[in-house]
Image (cartoon, rainbow, N blue to C red; front, top):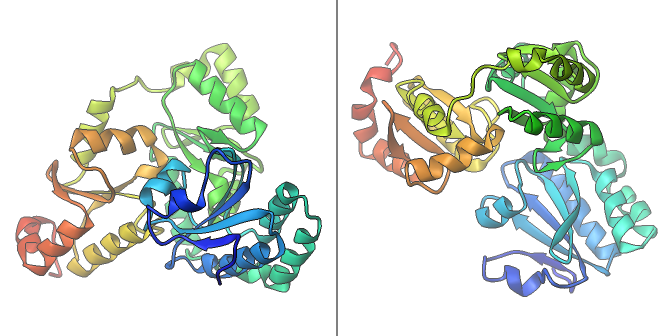
Length: 346
């Protein structure tokens, strides 16, 4: 589909041609990926909205094909929809949420009919736009244990540290920042499966939720009380500088990978391909989700002079990214290098 207000982005050079940050035009950006099933249904909804809302310019962007644009708009999961005016993000819809996207477009297009039109497009299919649970209860429990223990202080919030999506998440971020407490975060709006499972896992019905050293501490009110009494500061481990943290992480296991997401739920196509490649090679490894710690994510790029993810380390030394690992596998070099971490069956 091609219309005057709907563009499927084909190149980086095309973006400034169809997107003017100085314009008062409302832009709706659809960040999607072919490997993510929820995107297929939401792409149809996005097209239908474009057909019914000529005052809004709709741009469909394949997230991994245009990493710089995705990075600029802090895209951590697909599908994600960003509403932009005069170069500023004025709204976001994360995940396969057709009614919420319809509501956002209606709000900024000034067309009340858009809600009805897109709701009709999504209609009874909205339940099918969300991928079925990909993890068994046991696998989800393991995933949550990994998440809650992935950082000394781990918070589960609505939105991101740079763009909190509720006042309670914003208040928690302000408290931790004021106390100079380093933390990692997980955006529960980007993964409804994790969001719902965390309520039972923590036996706590609301967000934000705070974990310290893998143990549940509580929500915003509890943290406020603990900070006021000094108990929270005493609970938080002594801070390590970024270089020390990166050195420890790259040496955490003989074979260490830095990816978007986890091996069970990779959050980008390149990470997914790397995980599948390592599975085929039957090697044991540990992983780190760079989406959960932006300091590590940005710091590693400079630390090893490598601009993209995933990254693969062996005995603390960078081997490379997906393309290099693929080449090493194809020419047999990878098997020789990582022979000691091959599973016994091999």
